[in-house]
Amino acid sequence: MSSTTEQKVMRAQQYDARDNKLHLNEVPVPEPREHEILVKIGCASLCHSDVMLFEPNDQGLILGKNPVTIGHEGTGRVVSTGSGAVASKFKKGDPVGFICAVDCCFECYACKNVHNAWCKTGETKMQGFSADGYFAEYAVVDAREAMVLPENLDPKSSAPLFCAGVTAYHGIADCQLPSGSWVAVIGCGGLGHMGIQYAKAMGHKVIGIDITDAAIEEAKSCGADYTFNSMIDKDYQKKIVELTGGGVHAAVNFTASKKSYDACPAIVKAGEGTIMVVGIPQQPLEFNALDIALGRYLVKGSSNGTCYNMKEAIEFSAKHNIKPHMTAFKLEEVPKMVELMNSHKAQGRMGVIFE
Image (cartoon, rainbow, N blue to C red; front, side, top):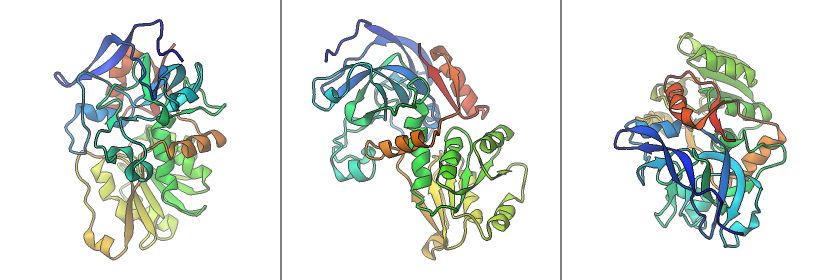
């Protein structure tokens, strides 16, 4: 398929490290390489890790080019493809979703079993950080990282599934719990509100924990069986232990709060519980070595998305009609979205819907 589009320039929200701000710039429409597809973006949504660009952190976010188009959650329709066999599997007009790793091999042990970030080539870039992302009218994506959307998923609203959805799904599923288990979802916002939906669809009993009334209401609307505002209810840990008969089987933490991680061991069932690390605080986490050595709880992580585990999460979402609660904005309003996220005033996910 031809790798050209009539439009030669486009608008893009780009982060500039020189002033630590976003700028709505006019940039060339990219052309797909042999293994890539060019997508007209239908929806791009904001993730907390996008906001980490603006703040000091020691958790491994690497800025490559500068300025860089931000955003790593996107869906849209194929405009054109590169000439390679993997790209040619897509056709013009296909509704697609995709994830953000590029320039990795996709074939080494790390790519297939851990995460593309640890590809043996050492060349991996993440769109939205070290390569241009999706808060733009068009984007090129690696065809190996893309899939055609199931029929009941709309490319104008499904972008959050391709980070928040895949991450939240595996944050719950990778706990490997039998149906009927107690799951605490810590942080009921952009990721957590989806985690609650996945946990309920898997048959678990769900406790939502957050620090804002808006997030607590979001948790209830997503089906949480019980909710606690940990800022207001100082006895919430004791109540959870009593409610669950000794503690939850998994505490899945979707927040960027170290304090919330510090509070996890007190609500996990001794000898049977897992603390699932999903959210990434600025500071390193601390766990008691004796607790871990004696098996009081297990600390695990969950891959936030590769082409090998993406499809399972998206198909589960479509089958169970799990959809993100998303507030729509315009491209020029992305700085406002960042402000709302930083002030904890956002509910669910925030996204740009393109015409």
